[in-house]
Image (cartoon, rainbow, N blue to C red; front, side, top):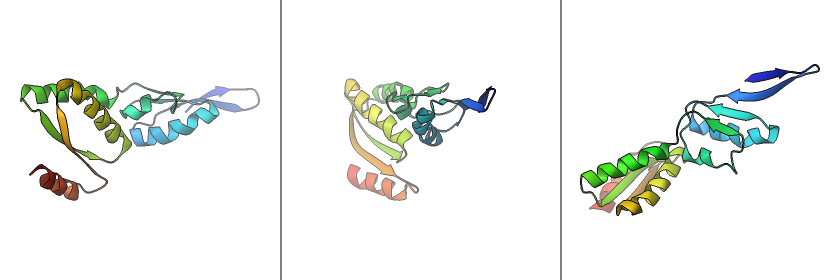
Length: 133
C-alpha cells in the first residue's frame, strides 16, 4: 500500500498488487467504494477490463484474450475448422474462452464442445471424449 501523510491521519491512496486475477477481482470490486486505486502486476483476466465493474483497477500485465489470435492462427495453420475447449471454471479462463468463441467466428472456426471443470479435470476430459466421438 502507498500512503499519503495527512496532518490528522494516514490516507491510503493506492494498493500495489495483488498479482493474480482471482484476488484482484475481489479487491478491485470493492476498492471503488474507498476511491482506492489498485495496480496489479500479474492479473490477466479479461473480466478485469470491465471499467463499470472495476472502476479504479489498473494493470501492467496484458489481458489473456491477447493470446486468442495466436491460438486461432494455429488452428488456421493446421486447417482445424472445429475445435473443443477444456477450461477451469474460474472467471479468468471463462472470460478468455468467451472471447475465443467470439473471435473464432471470424476465422470460420466452430467450437463444438466447451467443457469446464472446477478442481479435477478427469470428468471433464471423459465428457469431451464422449461428446467428440
